[in-house]
Length: 404
Image 1 (cartoon, one colour):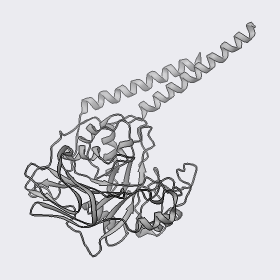
Image 2 (tube, rainbow, N blue to C red):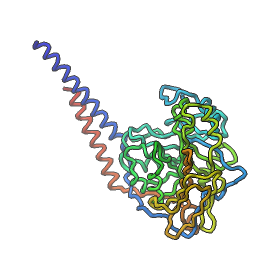
Image 3 (cartoon, one colour):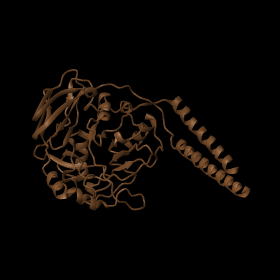
Image 4 (spheres, rainbow, N blue to C red):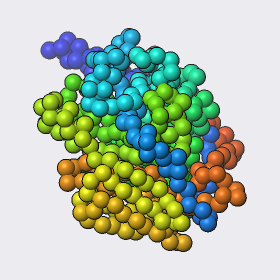
């Protein structure tokens, strides 16, 4: 009996020792990868100015819209796979559902486009961190591999955006609604990105987007599948972006995304698994026939009547609405900092337009502000010294645990 008790105690001590070692190694890894500047963020400053930016100023009604998904995972070489299908297979499935543009966004890896170099976006989804703070980099020369394991702080998120923006044409914040610790309040401070993914699941409110816009952080909203399962009808062709662009070449895509000459859309899972119905319904989606602003009046004309059209502005205030209509006109008031439309159709489709926002044309060409938050040197030194202390302390404790 005593021998069994002794063996039990040894096993218990070994288990405790192993758990303590794993915990200490994890703490060291978190501290070592938490290195970041600490910023003094500029305060929220709503849009202002006599002019109203029209993201649809280059709308060409002869070219009209091309349908796109920008957040697409595929099979890759190696073991880190989040999809069972290769890029050409995924592309064929999207094209069969009416998509003209598909760019690939595998984690920390650029994917070769099956159609050739002119369609290559050099995009990738940055981030393996446990809090799912993921960004999409368009047009990057190289993949930036560094990541914080637990990016809690707004400064850490800002640091990542800034580093990605140095090498990319555009940076997009992915799935903010599904990102723990990315709070709406943080969107009032972060800058350097130009695109933000819209809400997923059942939500259509897009509070994160409005939080950024209300703080004067001008950005465009994109709706993407974040595709991992192209073989499941409820996972593919559920969201899309309609770009006014002459082709699917990357240079044309970049122009449309940079100006905001596109709108985004949520789509039902037509047929609920019946692919013939899904393909048929996806070929007859409602769309925007014309959109723009003239004399301070926003005008939108649809291909068919909508169940409801909402114009919302600062802090998501409802500015105008109409029911069972195929068009709307709204005269922006002096107190309106921005306005965007959400359009609901009886079939379950939802369209989101990009925001019309005030700006000073004598100072800027768009409402987008190239902000460069100031680094707080004292807090940066103190924060990173704290990380060093945590690493050293954890390393010492790990040494003591292993030696016991």
